[in-house]
Image 1: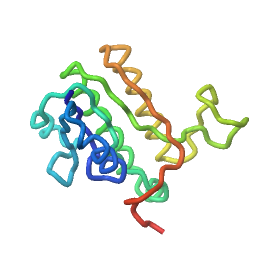
Image 2: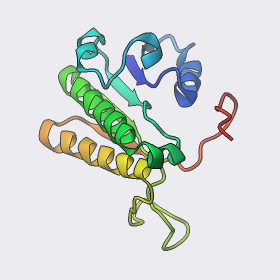
Image 3: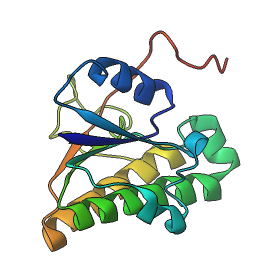
Length: 162
């Protein structure tokens, strides 16, 4: 199985690569700006080899910056998601989209998948729009999508932004 990972050089991308590295049934395709493959640049899409599954981890994610640079957050997060979905459509591949906590202030606990969503910052808004694009590509083009909504992810290798 060929698995493409966007954001492969980021915190989660490196962890996923590490977990899959020794699996002989998996061939990894690493997609990251650091290796010259920026999903927001349409001219690089034809440089990405075919795959069976696309794990989309690439995104701007530091919430305070989403207030300072909203244009960058919307441009990067939405264009990269759209490019990933188009690659999935062309390759007849599955998409795994890493969203985020998008529920706002909880109306009840524990928060479950039925909880109403409420974008409470520009970053969360880009994730909800990304989810909607995934749903559209499934409905219109049959691209199978799995949307994950992790809460706080932390651990070894995380950037120290504080």
